[in-house]
Length: 379
Image (cartoon, rainbow, N blue to C red; front, side, top):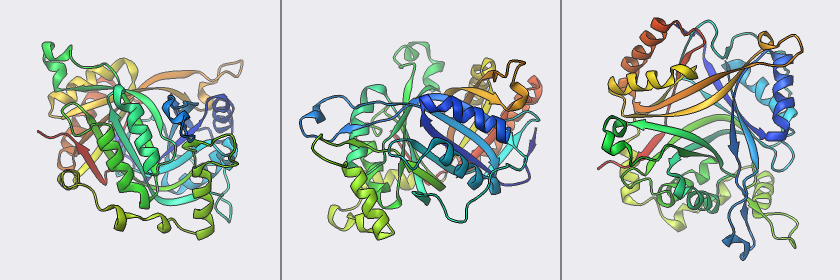
């Protein structure tokens, strides 16, 4: 395991489930990319006043992640935009987050070679820079309420996938039985102007500030193309509110016209104070074979990590994983994510590095992102 010397970007694509196989095939064939894939669902809230009482609609998506050199990220983003036809309403999203550090083995999912994709002279329709991705880990019973609140506050259609939480409660048998095995992760992509309003909506509706309520963290996104409608229009309407707002954004050339903070006021004092207390945080992530995940989680919690969440992925590892018939084999992988103070990152990274070296896990990688802020209960 060695630190990668060049800047690395993590590219995330959210594509409809029925299109995912063809998109993965083409990216593997043309770019020899290594892809992490897991199931997810989108969100559509009924706009008609009567239908608002019905449950939200949940179109099926696939959540794909790639690690590439920073200078290759835009080329990959544009290629995914073309393959997924992201100019069409409701077709998905692709966004790029920069890594602070990236440490990998010889067979990790980082793509080090140049990609054979061209960058157009003009950015694709809907291309944005400097937006935010809000990740909310919320108990499943509050997901529906939190999603509706986020949409009403101005987010794109949230994406939801499952995550397994581990922490101090797992060390105490009689407390462990009170914990739900899975949490739902809500990913909301927001423009800067909507960021604080959506964050407050998620925190309050998801009850994140209550004991055991979860956590919200905020990652800057360097570039993105997002086409995730949040609402379904009534039958008599030609377009939803989301479509109309997006059209006005394009005509105005910016989103500042939507800034209503002078009318609605700032965040509540408690929320603002919590955000200030938790600004010096980072996300530390480990990708490793699924069979080793619980041992690695227990090790890092014993070393002082405040808690962890685990997501399971299939890894498609380029042309090398095709069999004689052309079928792409996959490997069962897991990603462990920690939210921790920046000053603890190096020590906990070394714990994982020692574990990886001891077990010769060459397919593993460790990376981190700086967070804008985090919000969670602190008694």
